[in-house]
Image (cartoon, rainbow, N blue to C red):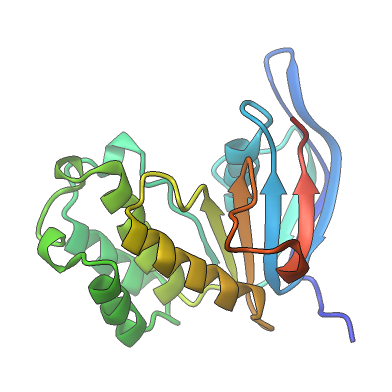
Length: 199
C-alpha cells in the first residue's frame, strides 16, 4: 500500500538573474528517505531553502504536512551562539522534541565537551553534528539534510549511516538527503524517492 505524501512540490520555478535552476519542478515526497541528487551549482541548497520557506519560488507551490526541520549550520549568524542554547531553542520550537534522543546522540557523536562553546569555536564537522542532533530529536515530519557526511570523523559517519538507515525505514516521517552522490552506506533499494537535478 502506497504511503501518503508528506511534501508536495508543484510546478516550482526559480532563477538567479538569468540562470534558471528549476522550471516546472514537481515531486511528491512520501515517508522514508528521498535523495536530492545534483552536481555543483545545480540547486541542491536552493531547493532545500525553497522547501523550508527561506526562499520564495517565482511560481509554483510547496506544501508539507506537519513540522519541518532545516538548519544550515554553516550560517554566520550562528557563530556567536552557544551550542547548548541553540539546542534549547530547537527544543522549544518543536513540541515533538525528544530529549532522550538528543542526549543519546550528543553522547554517540562525542559532543558533550563542545556544547558550552559558541559555534565559531567549532570545526565544520562539529557544527554539522549539532545540527544532526536537532534534526533527529525534533521528530519533525519532514527533515531536510545537505551533505551530512561532509567534514565528519569516522565515528560521526557511522552514526549518520545508522540514522539514514532508520530514516529509510520510517513510515511516518520523510527525510530529504541532498548530496552530489549517494553515500555508500545507503543503497538505492532503501530510497523512497529521487529528485535528480542533473550534473
